[in-house]
Length: 166
Image (tube, rainbow, N blue to C red; front, top):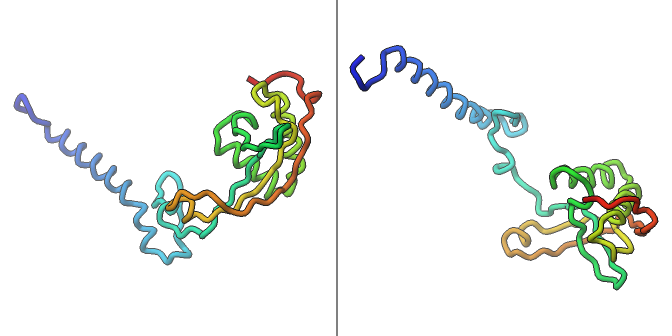
C-alpha cells in the first residue's frame, strides 16, 4: 500500500457494500413488474405507493369541534384530546367514532378532556363531525369547503373537570 490508497481487501469490501446499498435501493422496483392488483408494499423496502397510487376525488376527515357560549365554533386542537402524535389522535377519533360506530362515546370523552383544559373554559359543547372535502379544490386551489356531517355531540360540564391537563 502506498501512502494514499486502499488495499485490495478494502476495495473489495467497498464494492460489496456499494452493491448491497444500490441493490437494496432498487429492490422495491420489482413491484412494477407485477400486475397492479398483485403489487405489495412493505416496510422497510417500499416502492412508495402513497405517491403513485390513484387517490379518490374526496378526502374524509373526522375531527372534534368546540362551541363556545356565544355560539362561535372552532376545531379542538388535537393536543387537548390526547397525548401522542397528531396522527395517532386522528386515528383514535376515526377508530372509535367511525369504524367502531361509537361517536357518542368519543364525544363524551372529548367533552371531559376539554372540560379539564384551562384554555378552553368558554366551551359549552363539543361535536364529533366528519367532513368530506374535494381534494383538488383543497390542494390545488386552496379552497377548503365540503360537506360536514354531525356524528355526535356532548355538553361540556365543568363538574367533569377534576384536574387540569398540562
